[in-house]
Image (tube, rainbow, N blue to C red; front, side, top):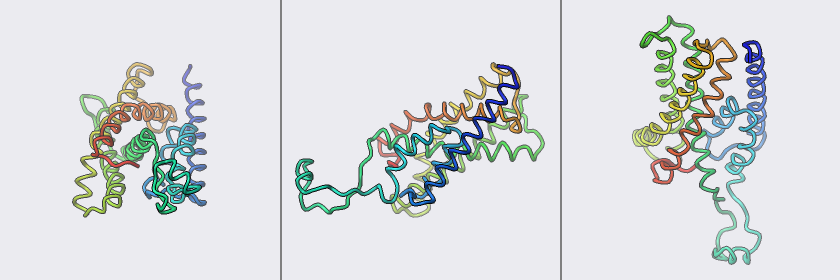
Length: 245
């Protein structure tokens, strides 16, 4: 694929991702808000890199965590008994998602902080003189990207953990750092690994954030970051270090 074709593919991918983001945002704003407020940001942000895949995940998993869908009505006392539930159980109860879906939500929650951090840092760095590390501007950019992504990731985790556990601000911040540091690092490792392949092997040059191909590569990197962070989030949630979402 020549550079012009890469650029066309990048523009199509970015436009499609933007449309998917707007579809999810419109659904959230027109009667389907998430029970956990921060997820109202996570799902549209996920669409910025995952595009149509984010739509599939949102309607199959995200819709189960809306304010209204988190509760369901048993059809009858008989059904309750068949499910080994007491007949006098309150009519409304929390609907439990499969564990793997909770891990997906938790991983996407981590990825949203990474995504917003990388977007903010990359465009922000255009306003300052180049920061070189080991003779490469890209390495300097990655350090800044990681710091901003880490900050936003902790903020996202803070606003998830604090209301869930009803913690004081200092305790919630400590829990957020504990829950998100490893997850976010694994996500960024996957993303940076792909970007290194793109810069040093595929294109053999650094790409600028003003080039749409840069963001096409970033979309692919974010998806790879999801897969490198998913096993860690499984362990974190299974061990109780990170809360189910």
